[in-house]
Length: 511
Ligand code: NAD
Image (cartoon, rainbow, N blue to C red; front, side, top):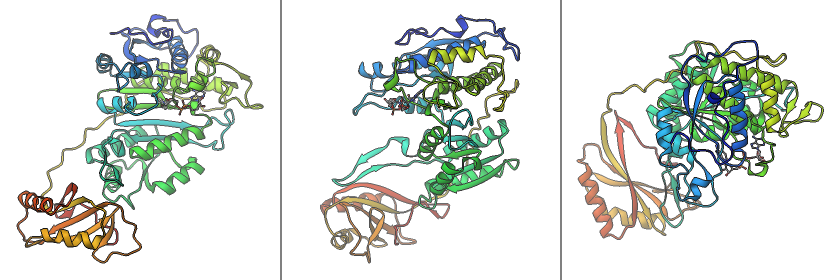
């Protein structure tokens, strides 16, 4: 299964074409055995930019042995709803390094996101996206941007747990875990340290989501205290995003939960001048995946017009990750010089700024001909020869909290009014165990609701135990049994606990 070829002409494996580099500067060592890398040529512009990127890496002396796997549109349309063949997993698990071109996700339902599947199945919890401006050589409104977005990759609303609960209401569960927060926040600080960055900024919306985003912020504060050499700050994501979009020079490394990071990193990538410039790395303890941030660009596929820079710079990140920093440095500096010399693909070509408009292949040739050169106006990059992948800390095991069962939220599907529903539910009350509140879309509507509040057919009905009253799961079972007898259409329950005496549930709005 090592050599399942990509759909287009397979790019030459760099290890198969060890052209000696005719340039001065740091020389990659080729004495070690080649590092096995799994690669996929993807769809649309994927094969073109993969070919160009591997050609450049090969010319720079990348010592890798590529195993090709098949992913994407053809696999989806062959009936595999995950977009990846079963046997491709063996290669991914063996090499632990995946160089991936973009794929096309077929239109219509039933297809799962391949990226999310790979990231989560292989535990790639950190998505790292450097977003850099190359002014004045690439037109941008934000010449001072040099931000790295470190996005949590496995949790949040991307857990993919969604339900339709009533005629009116659909739900998506937002899951945030303490180990998940600890891993990503520590990774952001370790990344900042390893890359000589000065500050880590956290974005959350913990003024509203006090428990989930509140945990992320709390863990950020705890971990930040372990890195006194680095500045730290927290912004509420809405105003923070506005500041990032207008004054990116105020930020350095940004760490954030999954959804905000997904949105913010596309915005900052676009701000750099073209979505075609941005690389991305997905990092975990068992594997890493390197890709461009953009998609398969079917509108320009096969036209030799795509910018290979995003995938190439992802390849540079991969070289550093697998311990070939000399190759990373050589390619990155040659690429900077090419951009600086005004040799540009159509997406970044600007009359007056650019010198020549080139296609994908000619751009690759231009980078190869500059291997060994450094940029003269853009800052050259340096990859330390003893650089190692950023340290990944396993989360610390914590003692179990004292958990006390104190009540239950019963979610009910009903077209009714709050007063009538409360009267029915109260017939199931028992001594020491009472209906305390009903909310609709989180807003308290009983007792003492407002007639102006808009209500749907989805009610959260909270039963609480009085202090000292006997209350356990058998109470819940008998309550639900009584509710069923009363004809109440309950569609879900949520247990209410105190953890070490602190409520593990939010209050109703207006409670
Ligand atoms: P896209 O990123 O493919 O294209 C958006 C625009 O940017 C297009 O005009 C395109 O021509 C341009 N563009 C993108 N990359 C470029 C490059 N390297 N050089 C020059 N121009 C470039 O986004 P889309 O059109 O929304 O999505 C197309 C397909 O890609 C969809 O099927 C989508 O699901 C998929 N997609 C895949 C990935 C991935 O595999 N990681 C990511 C995003 C989208």
